[in-house]
Length: 395
Length: 231
Image (tube, rainbow over all chains, first blue to last red; front, side, top):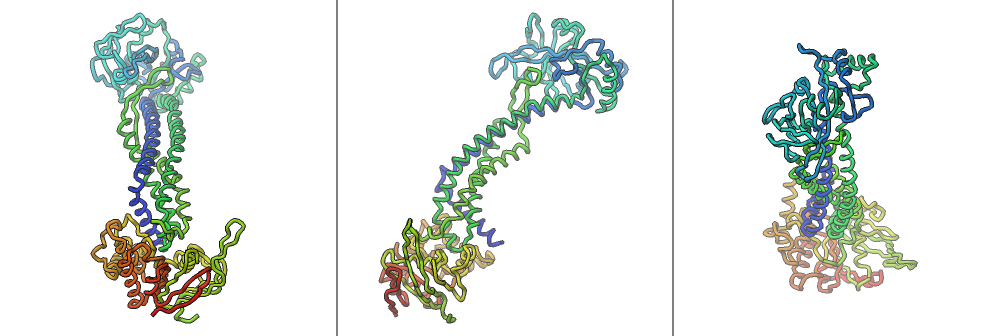
């Protein structure tokens, strides 16, 4: 066994030592593997970043209520008397001022993206003070909070980063109304940073919403225990509402972009097939180039298994080197890259590409697969190389 | 089989099938090689000398007959068993040296020892001894591209003897060398045979080379046509 390992190590080192004879073909294989892995990681980092942005927004202590059948806030409608009934329901937390219930409005306005100069939807959320207080991770990073009853708004840090014209002091026109930016807030990078916030009564007035809302957020009396509130809603026929924790809501929204990861794997698999064709050619050339060396080693008594393993190892070293370079490139060019895309409510969600160890692991697995498959058949040929080749009279 | 006999071919035949035609290389060939012998095998191109050498080295299998080595029949061994047998018993010297170009002389000579259980220190010691025997101690760290043809063949000889095999097979060992260098190599083989008791079988076209052997076998059309003892 020790001898076999020594043989495999010797053959592998010799194969790697002869790489300079096939420098350009070997570099092409490294490059192909690097490109495939970098592209896969870019897609995965995008999906991961979006999912993290959505997941980070959800609290298990907050329940979100929307009209039955509404999958997003945009297509939900809730009336004032329903808000009042929720305030009286079981399972809702209270403080000295009464139940912690935040009726919210969610309208779409236009912004100009810095990256493309094109118009894109941004959510303008109407909030009251309770709604502000519920978002415990919200921090004003610049300016001040809007004054209720005025056309003032605060902008999420993501909106400021990705869209033109939302700097503090700027006036922005939405339809007939002119709004003034008075502050910038951060919520730790989650989806709320992709929103504009203003006074709910002002928005109701400007957008002719009367006394209607689109969602209700309420703090649960017992952390994560949504059951009393669910039971209470089921018993009250006037409350045709669906309730879930905020965490569940955003988790389901985050899953919407899971197709990015799937798409990334499909694209990478197709590209990997192309890379494999090149890699197979490289490895067959390698075996042909080393034919006399392989046969000589076999004549000296090296096993055909060591010839097989040495060739597989060479392919895997080249592919994994490419994978590492691809991972490095993906990290340098994509990690933390800010972008925005259309979320579940037809509005732009600002998020950052996020590289993580599990993504690098997936990239490494892909590189290893490219190396193994591209090395297997040439390695089989190397293992079956006739020893007689060593005696052929060619230099 | 006498204890002095190292190799014996009994009624060996070798055929190739090319299309519908059966081509016979040997038919009913018999041969005995004693321990300590130095045999030159000569013959015109196509006479079957390289095929015979391949058969002696376990690289090729006969179509019929028996091949015995040191009391063991080897023509029926599996490919894996033959590989192990070669590692333990045979040292090869090729016409074009067949050194690994990415390894220095020392590492080339060490290759057969990678198949043994010797420690690294023991391997190094054996390599030093083999290189000293061929007069290349000062070239141990040199790559093959930094050495002349004669020096490369001497490295190949060191590689062939380093694991102390029972038989050394040489395939036109001086075919790529000038006369003076060829004589140096042949003297070295003669010294290995005479002073170290190595059994050597050498295939050659060169009558001058054959004179260094103890005896020469002439192969023509698959048969030994005459036997001549060279003192």
